[in-house]
Length: 92
Image 1 (cartoon, rainbow, N blue to C red):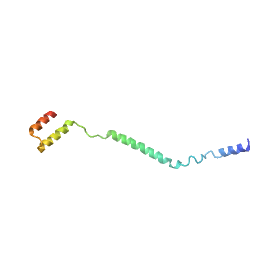
Image 2: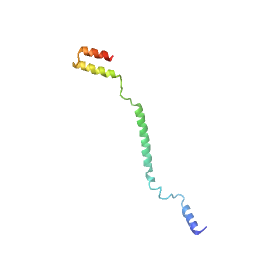
Image 3: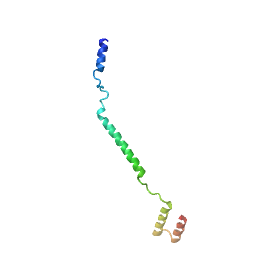
Image 4: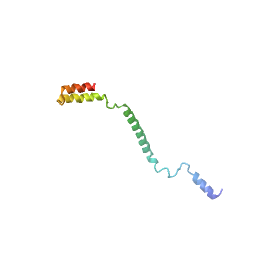
């Protein structure tokens, strides 16, 4: 083995725990990315559960709202009793 080969081999194998500077630049902050990703996953799961369990507005029967409006108009005097009865019978 020549001197150059021996020097190269001993330099490379001298410290097997030294990974160089290429990985140490962000290793101190990697926990932050892990924390943010975990928080995002938890938030997504909570959002999906709430979206599936929160009751939405009742749609109900559309004629119920029409009857309410008709009753309000009759109470205000906008329509006569005959018009009220005729339109209610049409809704039934």
